Image (cartoon, rainbow, N blue to C red; front, side):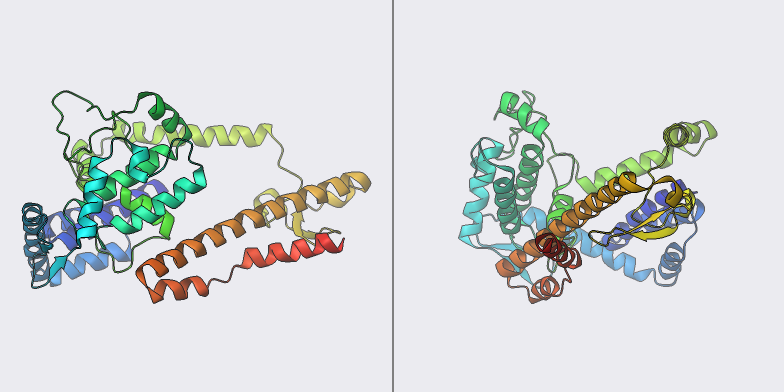
Length: 378
């Protein structure tokens, strides 16, 4: 079952995090569950590795305790320009980084966090987030409080980039705490319930193509429970509920309803007479090409007898419109990805990211240029 496969992948992901943290018992528990849900070579390999080499997990536990200790030590030594790193090396930071964190802490609303006004456009909002996210990412900024600042920056962008949440925030958002007993934690508790629907790290990865140069796993604490701990907690709550038949039925109910709706929709609505890709399920396997832009498309065997003259011309116009739209959207994504990689490579002087950007083939953009030349020639 595909549902079990997804759950097994989640269990393997949690087990991998547990291995990195040195929690061998938790890793074994989730790997065993993954094997029961959907056996894979990956889960089996990790189980074998843990069973044969248990000492590495205990060493990881020591590293985890040392890292936790360094977080508390770093918080007590703010302003000294050095933060204990739980090892022989120390993480240093500059006065400029400390001042930047303090500025974020003093901000009274999300607009001030990103350094923009309320009339800011979506594009300028992206630029502001991109610049600050790179500056305050905990892998590059080790100043005390940088993690909280990074979280606040991500939260601010996630709220303001959502039209509905931004509209509500403009009306209701303020620097007041969400409840009288709440701690302000350095001026960061002014959201009044306006929290992001995505973690800061996931948001960062969406902008920069996944992962940060020389990145290491981080936990972004919001003053109560860390994101990674929340995910593990929800997974463990699911384990505790058990795999009873009724519980499984309730979980599968939305999928069953979705399948039924899909089947009914297919029965009531006839499929389009063409497809940009070969689709054996609908019988659209006969390849044709538009007369104008020479775009390939696929139809059924009866297509030629059913569509002639003006009807055929309209079909081919629709095919070309769909194709050009797809190519244009994919080209935009390619350019955006390349721009983000080059920007990050320039800021952090990362040759690996620069080479990755320069080696992008930009196939859709080249195809768009070809189409534009055909339009001009026509």
